[in-house]
Image 1 (tube, rainbow, N blue to C red):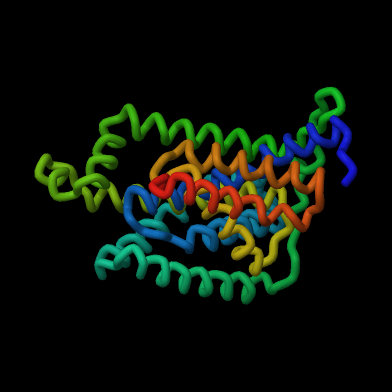
Image 2 (image 1 turned 45 degrees about the horizontal axis):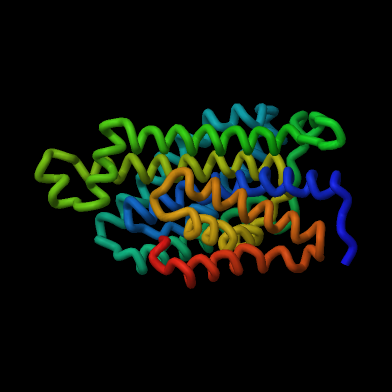
Length: 285
């Protein structure tokens, strides 16, 4: 095993932080849904890729700036998130059954993506991909910087909202004890619908970031599930900053593993970290 140069190692760590920021952004909505709504929403990943394909379509064929697609994707996905939660709440779906139902919804969305865009690989060509900044011998691609900036800004904003605002306190109270919260006048149903819409919107934002940096294929939906689940569990359910921090740890660990050893070892990192944490601190999540 040959040790990499300091420059390659530093670039690998930087790339791991960028990848981890995307893990955190993908895991944020899932963490809030699981921790505050008691719904394990696997459709979150399918919505992210739906957002990525919509960004690709609007930008490639409509001439819309990829970042401006957020003006269409965020409100559209908010409505989709509200609709999905309304159905789950209407039929009083349990957390385990929500996992099964949203997995079925994921398969439906994957089939829809293949029907519209086929199973061929798609790549968004944008002006963002041409820009990269240099600090010494390190390169910072603009798409990855955008992903990192959005992930940090959104995570901090939601953390502050949950901790400082009356709305955030109401959400936490409803998640802790819904009957007592209702007795104090908190409209748990309205808050849950709003939070579900927000979570779906976060998936759409993550989709835009995926479109900026990655080649798209419908089957790739499932390649992200394991590592993002690990980031959510390591970061703690319902904790806005948790997935971002855990995602960066996983991303850096994977990147360093690929630089030092072999890329084939990288997928083992996230689950090894997850198993270790769950064994040492089984009540972590």
